Length: 260
Image 1 (tube, rainbow, N blue to C red):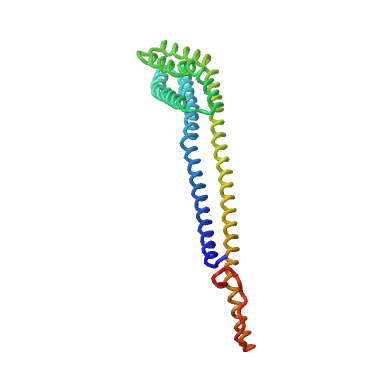
Image 2: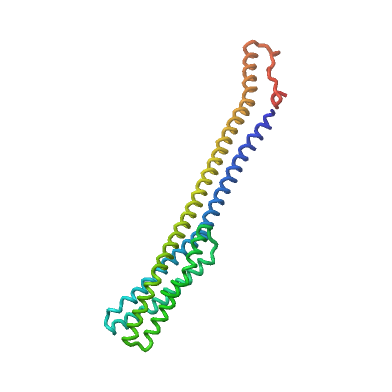
């Protein structure tokens, strides 16, 4: 092989190795970015929404039971406390409905869809009982309030609590499970990307090592192709000087520039 071709092949191999390493690096970075975007745009919003549903249910329950606990207070204290609680209960009910609708519109994994269908079956009774109906009862009790109206309000809350507590606890259990499943999905996706990144890094390292080996081998052979005839020429010149024989020739045959 001609020396010029060897040098060209050496240069091409080096550039090709750099190109492949760059392509792998770009692809790996791009894949990692896509994974982060998917988790950030698809999985985490679902997890946040279902956690908000769960949190707002607990918030409604807190306002509900706070309202039912004022029945032992003096009448004036009851009025002050219930007037304070009414806007808080309205807000909690509104936020619960908002996040319920938001999560309901999101695509879900099959196992989460099944759990959510169960939530939707028992949601109306709980939400209307401890949510909107309680707000209506409280608004009615606080319009032209009397001790009798407040007492009737407390009795109705006790009935609602007894009939809806089980549904509320079941919804909380189901949304907890949905949140747990969503977290597992996120973890599994991140772990899969981590494994894929390690595989890409291994391939990139292997290509780099092979490229270095190839460059070293080509470099050594190219250097040998240049040095060998030079050494032969040096040895021949010395022999000519020693023997004073101008008929001596350099015995070198190769299909390269020097051999020609």
